[in-house]
Image 1: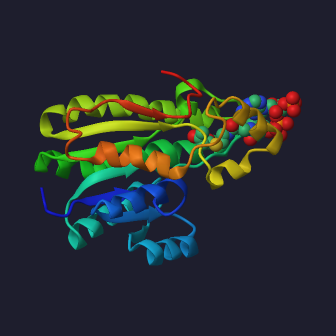
Image 2: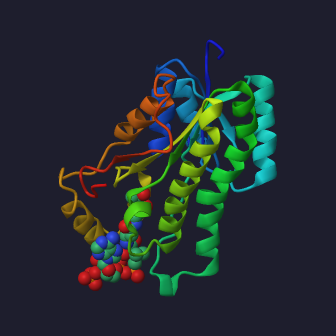
Length: 242
Ligand code: CAA
């Protein structure tokens, strides 16, 4: 393993992803954060944290392939991959059109396939890797208005378990983190009356903080977490007990 490990965080300049990038850089990883649209916020984040940033739409395989090749040429092999990029297009199923379905599938699920598929061979070849997939409480339980999102977040758990089996003898661990409701921009799309109902169901009595998820990721990324693979680390303020 190189002295300075390279960590790639998709959706790594905002919300939970930004907290993950910030934590990993503090823990002495060389961190590359991918962002898709919000260039200004990404540049500010880079200035504040020294995290490297790259624009990459994770839903496009060829774009991901170019990005990964550039990273490997410039920084070296990636040993930690955090599949965090995710979007919501909420709406009750009878109002959900095909675009809302495919946008979410393409980013949240195909994005996980794309990055992992491109990085997996070098992890296997190196005999070392950490893949951490960000799922969600809503993939564990289902959620009104999120047939698309909860389908992707449940799928990510199956993907995690299968890759854990395939990586087990090659030094590559694959785990998921399932956050509950966390204070991020994603929550802004939830109507206030609905948010009140959601918070009322969280036994801790508040939303989670992005850094409370980031520390789960830092723990799973650690070389010493080598016997933990195929697991789902749940952090949801006791909202759903598994
Ligand atoms: N919990 C409880 N009740 C809910 C609910 C929820 N999650 N979502 C909707 N409802 C209720 C509403 O309160 C409302 O009830 P009343 O008629 O009694 O007021 C009823 O369902 C209809 O809801 P709306 O009036 O809001 O209907 P709409 O068609 O305008 O919007 C919706 C539907 C888009 C699903 C909207 O309600 C919504 O955005 N709900 C939140 C969905 C959600 O939880 N998304 C999670 C986003 S955060 C995230 O995804 C991160 C993560 O991983 C946890």
